[in-house]
Every structure is written in C-alpha cells, then in structure tokens.
Amino acid sequence: MAYVAGPVIREGTQIDPWVRRCYSIIEEAASFARQRAALPYVEMPLERATSKEFSAQILGRIRDSRSVVAVFLPNDTSTPIECALAVQEGKRVLIIHQEGVRIPRLLAGLPGVETLVFEDFEQRHLFEQIRRFLERR
Image 1 (tube, helix red, strand yellow):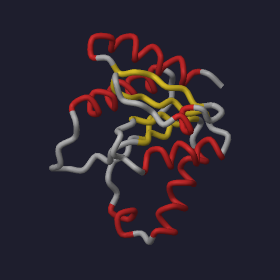
Image 2 (spheres, one colour):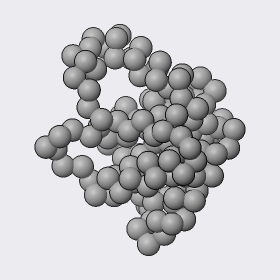
Image 3 (cartoon, helix red, strand yellow):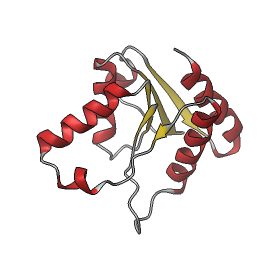
C-alpha cells in the first residue's frame, strides 16, 4: 500500500484541480503497480480523535505502508511532517509539487526523498514516474 499525504478530501469542499488530478494519477499508477493508494479522505473517527490518537493513527498508517507519495502545497503544514515521519520509519517518499513551488531543502534533502514536478502537459510522464517509484523496493 502507498500512503498518500496531501490535502484532505472532504465532501462538499473544493479541492485544487491540480491536486485532484494528481490524486487520480496516483491511484491509476498504484493500480498499475498492483498496489492500493490510501488517499487522504476525511474520516470522522480521525476528525474526533485527540492529538495523540490522531498522531498515533497517522504514524501507524505510515508504518503499514510500503512508501509515501505526497502532494505538496506550500501552505499545508501536515504533509511535510508526514514525509518526515515516513523518512524516520525508513520509507521512501515521493513529493509531487507544482512548477515554481520550492520544497524546503531540509525536507527535499532527507534520505529516501525524491521530488517530482507536476506539469499539466506531461501527465503521462508523471504517471510513469509515480509507477516506477511505487514498483521499486
């Protein structure tokens, strides 16, 4: 299973179109790689959890995953933390971001972290890069 970090998908809430497209490509690539992508859908038990319960649940999911694929937005504070937790657990991390968005050097330089630029006109390339990342051990 690939743990997917990024903006939470909530019913009735707008999600950036490029993020939506990214999630779709991640799901497609995971399926092709015979894996499941655990997208960040809202879950009421997690919404009601205490901070400690929430952190334990997220860390458990990261531990149970084979790798982490993150959709990075500059104003999202949780995704970089999830990436750092994944690195601490020895997971490989792929961070997808829009062109022109700078990933903090401290995050991009961690062991096992790769970055990939999302480009609208190169979605096939994005699919192939994600698929190859997921298929690597």
